[in-house]
Length: 322
Image (cartoon, rainbow, N blue to C red; front, top):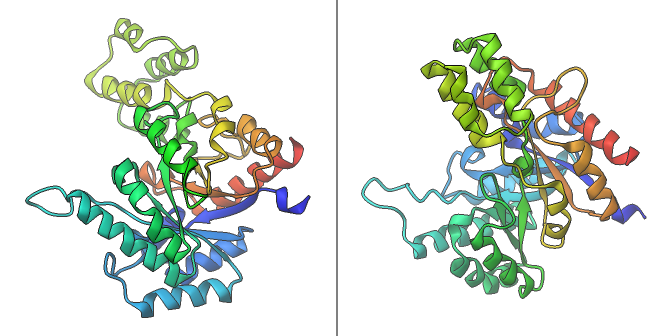
């Protein structure tokens, strides 16, 4: 059935380079997303809204009009809990709650049916948002992002809260939790910093073979090489099992389709999409998978539209062939 099919959206965060260099404004980002074949939009409010965290109705209504102009579905307003906003202390829980309520209001005015936050909201504040979400008719979800994983103790609390929320409170699995191997841009960065080719290949082989980081000590690495080895092992050597995705889908209001680089073969050796897409099809997940390109953290030489075009082609093909 058509309503059981996956939908393909994009986070405007994926256009970070073009947005920061003023090659594209907000309307340009939405237009480019449409041209690439995506049907829904999320945006990180702290990045996209120049007035954030206190946004005018004029800006919000203009965004809504842009979405309507290009017939793009508003998927999710992505809020940002900057607990270090003040220089003298961290924000307290009531302040975090107030910022969350503000973002829910912004989401509603801009036409978004849901708003995303981070786990720093705390279980207590998360559940306390339920009456306000019901009043505004806006769903609220928490992103599960690496290094968190499905069995982190606080997430066991969140699941229970989601269960009793009537669907208003949920989650956004970020596919970074399944990262299993360094992506090419990170590898290139290490090589450009002086990581010797033979040593780099040896470290990558150890990660592929799931050998402990202690075994890299016998390679007699330089300080620079040890730095990158620590980064590789910290982020890519302990992924969640793809089999843990299916139980999360009953709570998922959307999915963050994280990726860093896709080559000409349109294959991701870092995140196992070839295993993930069949799970989404088998479980009849009918929400959005939202492309979130983060290669700009490692290189500004890549072609963003090309990367995003490769991503939607890869994921659609894997989904259709599953």
